[in-house]
Image (tube, rainbow, N blue to C red; front, side, top):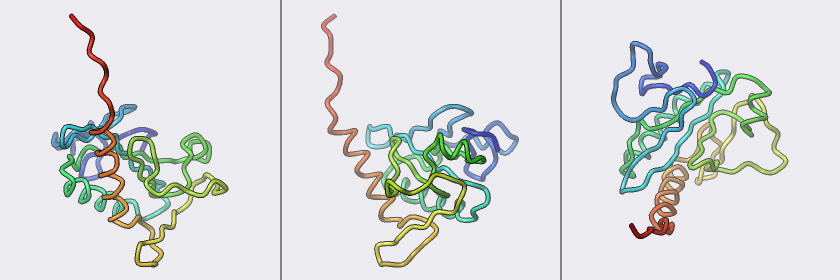
Length: 158
């Protein structure tokens, strides 16, 4: 799959025959935004095909989005397929979930970028190849709250 190519809910590239037409999945080079409770949030899942955990992370992310009232299909799913792209994307491993451009579990500053499987620490202390679902929900709620409480642009008189 090409860089920035989005996928439908069943994993097929947008524009393929498998495109369902449901939800707001971004096309090539576009950002996906999830609307819920009057706030738009940009959500990305970056993955490397050499790591088998991204389908589980995508399913968990969609479930969390649905629980928070967001469109679970509005995710920009992007494959990172080269070391150069990993460096450009600041990609520390697969899967990486970003909400409004921020990693939901920011890596340590010395963590290298590259094509590797990512390791997460669950709230119960277990190590996992996917983020804790509660961390995902918390990041979604924080992004929604930030959008709701951000001052709106001043209106100019007509």
